[in-house]
Length: 123
Image 1 (cartoon, rainbow, N blue to C red):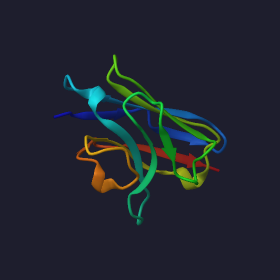
Image 2 (cartoon, rainbow, N blue to C red):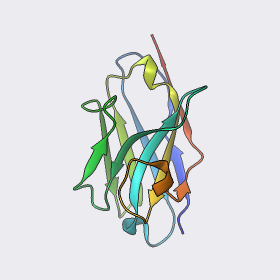
Image 3 (tube, helix red, strand yellow):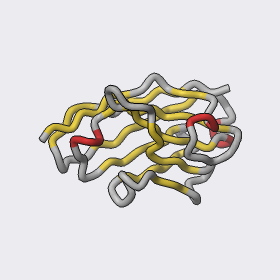
Image 4 (cartoon, one colour):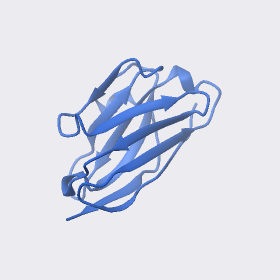
């Protein structure tokens, strides 16, 4: 089992950057594929990015490709989401999630979720 705690959210202007962190507990953090999802007001939760256990395989939503980078440090038990060139459409609560069922873009694959961190991008 793993517990996840996100941090790093905040309010920024268009074009600025933020880095989100998600720290996990438990000895088997490296056994999990990790993902980031987001949910904007009135919208469904959507996939943002995912990484396998050692960051050699990553996947991004088309809307963030080229602007966001997911990475992880298994010693620190932390996964990161570097977000550059932020847009108002990136405004959402961002959640990290852990999966032992494989690497995927569907929320159903992920069994453990953090509480979320708010990102607000203003024009």
